Length: 71
Image (cartoon, rainbow, N blue to C red; front, side):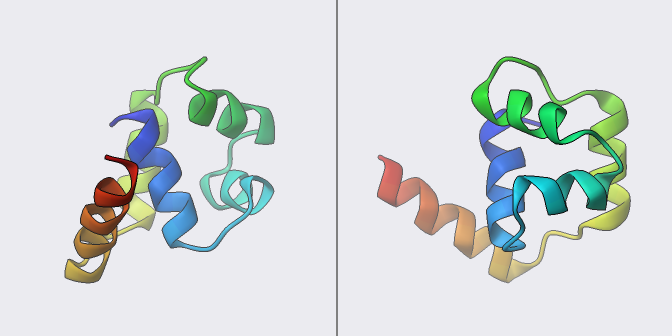
C-alpha cells in the first residue's frame, strides 16, 4: 500500500491522524511519518487496515476524484 492510499483512507473516513492511529492501534507519530513518506506502510499496518476497512465503490470513486484533483 502506498503512503498516498493510506492517507486517502484516513481522509475518506473523516478521521484526524490521532483518531486514525487509535482506529489502527498504532502511534500518532507512525501515522504522520507514513503520510509524510518517511516510513512505509508495514505489512502489520496493512493487515489491520484490511481487517477494519472495506473498499466500496464509493471509496473507489473518491480515490479517482482525488487523483484527478492532484493530477
